[in-house]
Image (cartoon, rainbow, N blue to C red; front, side, top):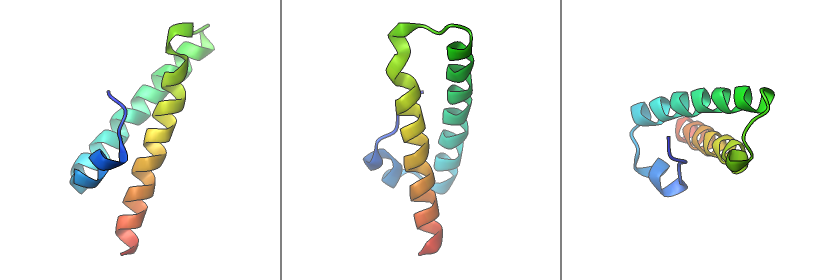
Length: 67
């Protein structure tokens, strides 16, 4: 899954946000497993970007519920 930008999140519906969040969490789980097994150096930034994308989604989702 491609990493999500703030602009993309704003245009998503709540269902799309939830689905994207689940996909990113699965991707993060796979990246953690790769790191635990020795990991590839070529994908070192993917872990950080995935975490940040999840944080952006969660922030936007919680912001939407408070309004």
